[in-house]
Length: 251
Image (cartoon, rainbow, N blue to C red):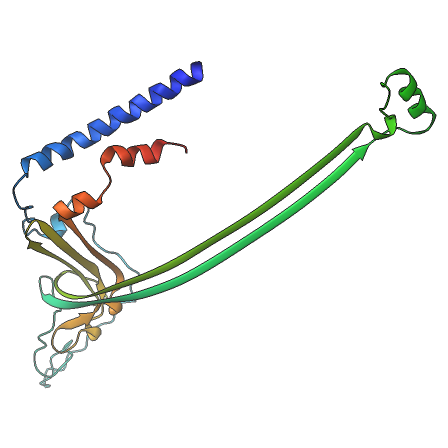
């Protein structure tokens, strides 16, 4: 009875928690009924709450050499001024190309069998049979234990992802060795659905092409996010109460 009461209390607490968690989201959704999902305002990535400057292992600094009688500009990568992104605030185009395919298969099998017995023989066994044990039971076979264990497990993964698009990113930081920290965000609203694309990472200036572009596979510590929000995304997501119960329910 006590266990049943505790179980009911846990279920009621889970339901109350789900209602509280979904309250704010429900109010926001009701306020947006019949309206298009709003676009986020353009903001400086370095002022966002979760922003932290990137720190990476750096080589020893080298002293620059200047030639006063030369037309060559010290530190320049070309004879004429380089138009590619190189300073904080510069913009470059990121070509995002993701074509991943993975197939994994695992199989595990385990088996174990044990058998053990215990008994008393000889004169002592005869005495035990006569005095202590009922008819038909022998002391030579007092105990017999058998155990069998069998386990089989199989798992497989078949995944395929494809994404090809471009996005403009802003240089937010220049590291001491010259590498650039970039971050870009793109939002596209179609009817009542907003698609978001986020790109961030570290690039080498040498990898930036002459038309100021860089491929996504050349970005170190790349963070690429592609998703959406709106009516379609809301319908595809389980309700908040179902998500909470899936986490808390043991079975």
